[in-house]
Length: 138
Image 1 (spheres, rainbow, N blue to C red):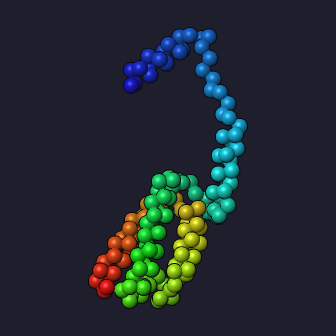
Image 2 (image 1 turned 90 degrees about the horizontal axis):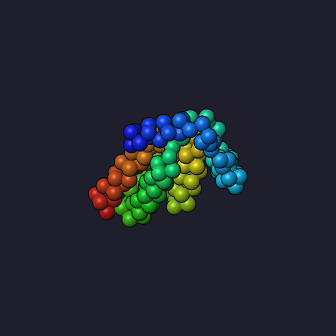
Image 3 (image 1 turned 180 degrees about the horizontal axis):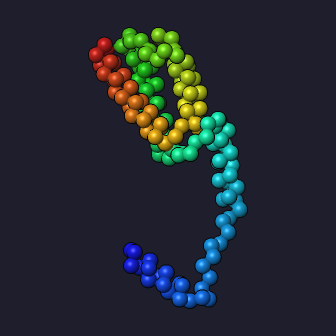
């Protein structure tokens, strides 16, 4: 690959008539990306330099959804208590989902990539613990 790149570069540099300028990006695409950036920064109040990837954010949403689902199941079927100090000992589904929706929106817009990765690991452990507790007390 490097050999081919060097060969093509030498051909391009050897031909002064070859136009190597890049075309302008489509206006619609530039506007779409600008709208996405503005939407992303709507809830951002911290300067984030190392943005998490879409895949990391998707994993976070899936893990937190599993956390809520296993917590709701455990509260209804295994007679366990919620361990989150922000919530009451036996929150209803609306309280769990509301808390996750608000906090995750703020967290996803203000966290660095490494923080999201760490939180994904911690949430995965929480889901596994929920499953363990459900199996133990059900």
